Image (cartoon, rainbow, N blue to C red; front, side, top):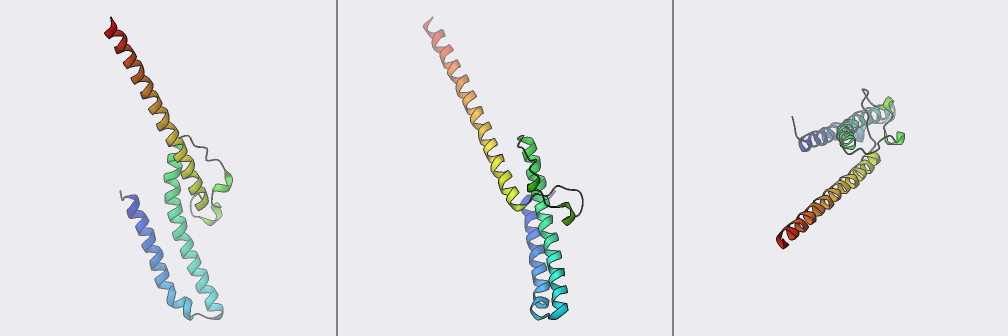
Length: 134
């Protein structure tokens, strides 16, 4: 299974290839042909962007489920009419917000564990001190 970095790189390369392929056509097209070229360019670019968003969204939604982060905001999702398949795709701003919420929850869990471990260490030190006095 390819790494996340490799997948992102593939999407970036795909986007660059689309730009390279359409650059000559966009600069020389005129009239109706220009509109058709722009439409095709936008369609291919959108497919590439939605593919990357889909990849990122699936990762973030799994993390959100793991950390029990609420992800029910309907404004966070891309309109399914614009995408292929039935996957839930988060918008870019929703991805940022969900990352922030996951970070907060992860930090809270780490703090909870640190407090628990500190309390256990405190109890153990107290027990050792009591046992040494006897």
